[in-house]
Image (cartoon, rainbow, N blue to C red; front, side, top):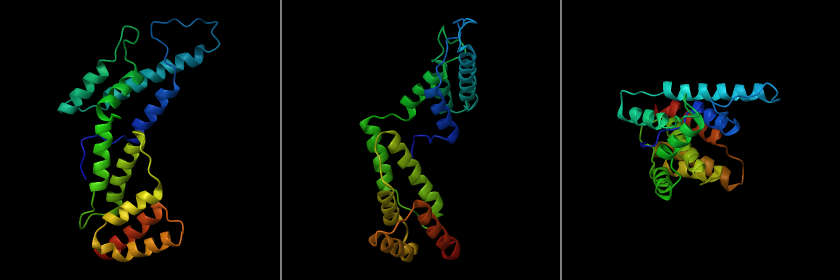
Amino acid sequence: MEGNVPCKSQEERTLENLQKKVEVIKETETIPDSDPDKKEKLANRELNENAYANLILSIDATKATGRTVFNLIKSTKLDDYSDGHAGNAWTSLEKKFEPKTAPSKAKLHRLFYKAEMKKDVDPINFITYLEDIRSRLADAGIKMDDEHFILQILNTVTKGYTTEVRLIEEKLDKSETVTIDDLKDRLSLEYERVLK
């Protein structure tokens, strides 16, 4: 379970969604008192400044990747945005770490299909790893339905889960609903009961 592309945290996803929704007003632009949206525009400007500051503060500049990230973010400072533009910074980071190019999609695809659960690994950790790759594939435009995802997990768990795999496959054969949470629960119970 390895990969060079950092996983997006919930905070990063929230920031990304926020920046898509917020129209950032240039710092140098004076908003007239007569503008009916002045309050919202000032709030958006403050959101941008806070988002940019949070990006900067989340960096570990003692490591090479952190210094690269810092420089990518810093490069988005412009005359009109002397305190930085969080939306531009985020776009710059996405281009670096979550590219949507064919080679990056192929790499994620390869990571997903080559992943195999190791003996004595908690199945929740393994499934979470695959969920992260699935999410990154979806961000890159490659969607995967739950049944396909579940089948891939069933094909990659260790032999200690043979009974659980058979029971879940029987449910799928009968067109019964099996959720990812159901799968996690069954495999986790078996891990706690026998394999741990």
